[in-house]
Amino acid sequence: MSELSKKTIELSIELNEFSSFKIKNPDDISLLIEFSLNNSELFGEIIFIAKYLNGLGKILDKIHYTDNIQSRDETIYKIKDEYKKNILKFTDLLGKLLECNKNHSSISNLENKYLSLNQESMSNLASLIYDLSWVKKFYNSKRK
Image 1 (cartoon, rainbow, N blue to C red):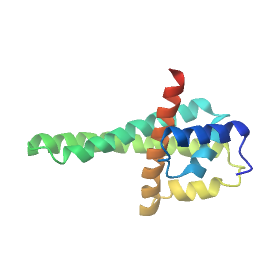
Image 2 (image 1 turned 30 degrees about the horizontal axis):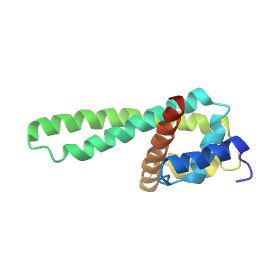
Image 3 (image 1 turned 60 degrees about the horizontal axis):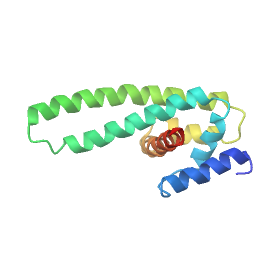
């Protein structure tokens, strides 16, 4: 991790402590934070969408236990559609952030891990979204 600035290392340590060490991909999150130093607006959009997607996922999990089947099915359809639109936007923005840093040695690993269209990368992407929702919460806590 010698390629990280002192600022990124400090932020990563604070973030891990803030999340009670729940970050699942700490090295990748540190790299994305490093990339964000030159792309803060783009990274801000990414973490905003990540937090939104994380919330939608929680809602979908809870809806399965609703008694009203018709209402439940309509709601699930709407939320899945919203999730799909935002996951596409999220992956597009993540791809742009990685493209902005294409000369970095870890870019191809990150692209393969999160942006390949296979089951493993989708699982990895869900894990990254979870982590980035923590980043958003962390940054929000800094504004107060």
